[in-house]
Length: 280
Ligand code: PDD
Image (cartoon, rainbow, N blue to C red; front, side, top):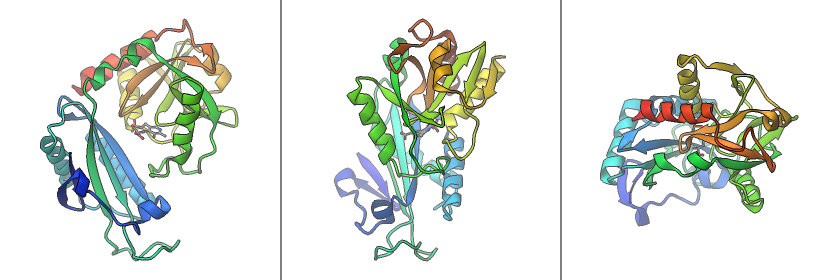
């Protein structure tokens, strides 16, 4: 693999950053994951816009403009002959030399890293046919989940809780309402409506979410953006998730109880088809 590190293209063994980097010491950084299908980047403008927003919320600017960053993404696809997979991008506040809670001076160079992960057949994931099983767990993350920071310890623990329970993922719950999945946005279909939590500081503003809701509305499906409870989800006709890496994935079981018929629902299946058609 050829990795991009601060303007250089290096083999992965040489792709290193300082132990003093604030990303390493403080999780002081943000990231984006952009999918690649058939060598094509999906939803790049959305990911670039969210990156700029995440950086801005943390008092940082873009290391280069979105067009130049797009060229780096494209070069990375080309240098790695990437067909299906994803591009991981991470920007941290850099290496101020010493460990200090206070931010270093603004002129401290950021650390900018991009690498690829190949996932052949990404669009044909078997789970799309069988559906995912999930458990619900408490959402104990910090209060600015709209910023895509690299502080992913609790989502990692959530995935491990799911693994231990023999299921695929976990939905996080706060005050009885589902916030989102460990690395995806959560939806149910009930009363003929697609219901998903409204945007705020308590969830990540998914780029796939924005695209899927737009396609749903264009297809005359009714969308309601509001929090829903675990009980509503269990009683729903369908449930599903969206993310850059999974597109749209049906959820067929919540805390051991079947959702709807226990098979992937027609709305989730249709939205997955539309998303993939529109993206390719
Ligand atoms: N995760 N919510 C959370 C907490 C996420 O981490 C993600 C993305 C999403 C979906 O956002 P998008 O549609 O823009 O991918 C929602 C990425 C894929 C990851 O961490 O790998």
